[in-house]
Length: 127
Image (cartoon, rainbow, N blue to C red):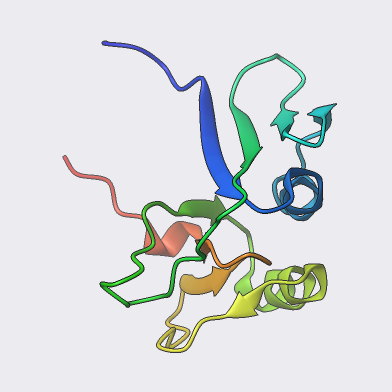
């Protein structure tokens, strides 16, 4: 092992606002909230997500090589049909080109970062 995940850091125009979206989506409590950054972290103090302010933020565009995704988050859910209306109500957008196959759908968060909702049947483990 080389290391372990400390934090996933996402650029955004308003850290507090985007943290609110992911706070509900990932069920992680907010432990820091300033005008420059916000941090979500589980109760054990590991696996955090940090949102940092970028004044000239340029949102990624799904499948656009001029403004690539740069990163995305996979979120495991039990049922896509139950999870989808919840993420849409939070401000997510189902991305064009997401053909809604069983076990996998692609969305954008409120500032354009893509993320996927997955179910167990979409994940295969290699031998």
